[in-house]
Image 1: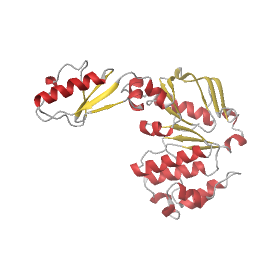
Image 2 (image 1 turned 180 degrees about the vertical axis):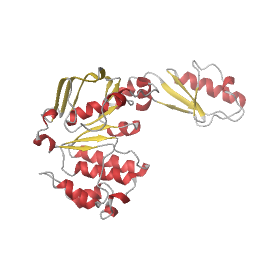
Image 3 (image 1 turned 90 degrees about the vertical axis):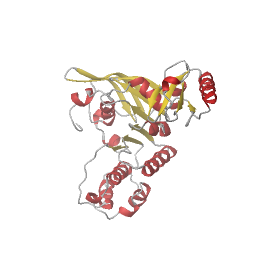
Image 4 (image 1 turned 180 degrees about the horizontal axis):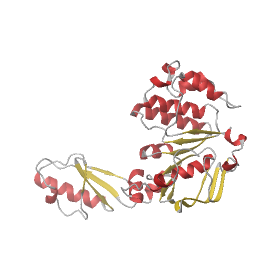
Length: 312
C-alpha cells in the first residue's frame, strides 16, 4: 500500500484557488520531493497531508489515515520538521529532545539522536545560544525523536553551510535505508536531485511534471554548451552556432540539440585565431534546468497572500 495517496485535491482561500486538482502517490520507503515557486500551492498541499488544514474536496490518505481526523495513532506515526519552528530558548538541547521524546510511545534514544544530527558538542547548550544551522539540526532531531514511519521535511537545510548540508543529506539517505517514507520540500534543486526517488513540480496549484529526476531530465532534447571568451573577444565575433549564446556569470551558454556541430564550429573558429576557450563544457540538462523551463524565473506570491499565516 502507498504511504500517501492524493486524489483530485482542491483548496481555495477567499475564492482564489491555490490547489487545483492535485493527484499523486508516495510509495512506502520513498523519498518524494515536492517542488515549486513561492505561491505554487505546495505548502498548502503539505499542510493538508499533515492534518493542519482541511481540503475543500478530493481525497487524502497518509499511512491509511485521513489526516483531517487528527487521529492519535496517525500523529504518533509521523514526524514534521517545519521551516521555522519556535523553541523555548532557555531549554538545553538535551532537555528539549527529552521533553519531545516523552510525547511518543515509540521513541529514539536522545543521546544517539543528538549525535546523529551533528549536535554532539551542544547537548548542554541552551537553545538561545545556537546558530541558525544548529537550530535546523535541532529541528531534525525533534522531528525524528518519535521514530516516525513518515517524515515531512520543509526546507530542511536552510541556513546550513555546505558541510552541514551534506551531513543532512546523509541523514535522509539513512532514513531511506531504514525504510522510512520522506516527503521533502526544498528550493535547492541539487538537493532534490540528490535525495529524491521521485519529484513533483507544482505551478499555480497544479502538478506540471512528475517522475524520477532521471526521467525528467531525459525528457529534455537539448544539451548545454558553456564556455568563456578571452578578454577583448566579443561574443558577436563568434561563428553561426545555430542559436544565440546567453550570458551566464563570467561566461556564455547555448542550449542546442546538435552539440557536436556547435563544438566543431567553436573549436574551428578558436583554432583559426589561435586562441583558447576557457571552461568549454558540454553537459546534459540538470533538474534545475528542467525546473526553470517549467516554472520560469518569476515566483508569484499567490499562495502566501491568500493563505492564512501559520499552522491552522
